[in-house]
Image (tube, rainbow, N blue to C red):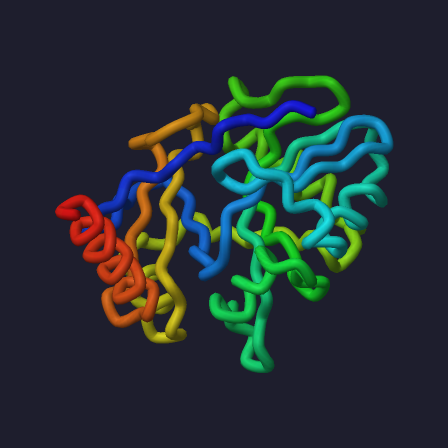
Length: 210
């Protein structure tokens, strides 16, 4: 089954603003691409590894979609009682037992019923995604977006809520694999994901010295 290298946002400290931008919440989880072709479903990690068996709720929800084929891009998460994503619990998806309660916050639609949508503008892909997920099972949920609001306001609210941050996306952007400047990620400096990233970077530097 076809694995597509995901589009990666560029990290920035400033929030782009204007009518050409839309904003999504950045949930603290793991990136996955869910691919269905006929009756077969695969849930690929960002690196292309198949974790379908460890993520049954996502795979089953893909099977239930009323389509012949589809490719969704999103963030795999497990939410706690407060509704926030729990990164530590989500890491269990890579164990033998998997994470049966994990679901996909889908934010993009790359292919639908044999049509490659990557050259369509984000706004068009988004409209099709909203329509597709209107009656989806709980294993796949729409990652909501916000428009017609100043980006700085959206980011401040995300920080107040203790979320990881936001991703700003140009409404006219095409889907390109690899690093992309039409998608901008702004991280909440007080979120634990910042400390995690610093520890990972430090570990890599130490390993490079030895």
